[in-house]
Image (cartoon, rainbow, N blue to C red):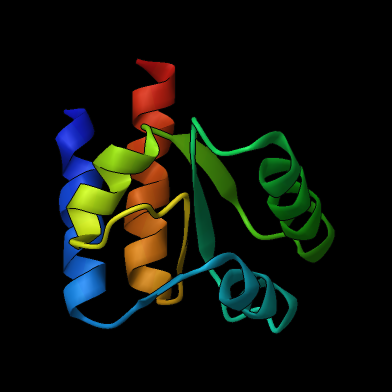
Length: 105
């Protein structure tokens, strides 16, 4: 399974309106359990990464560190995005399995 596959799903989820971008909005979605999966770019600042990791850990939301901000931003067609929350269970589940496969590979 190629790395591009989860990015394809990310683009689909974006077009379907099933993702949240922006740190504040993502934190709200985590707290309300609306977020089903959180993706953080590998080149995100330490503080932001820690904040999102801590929130996801507390609220038991899966979180994955993925490619750089340029790659994930390009996948959703918005620039400068460092974190993305997937708010639809089906997309989140599929992306999570693809990411776990990449991490194992």
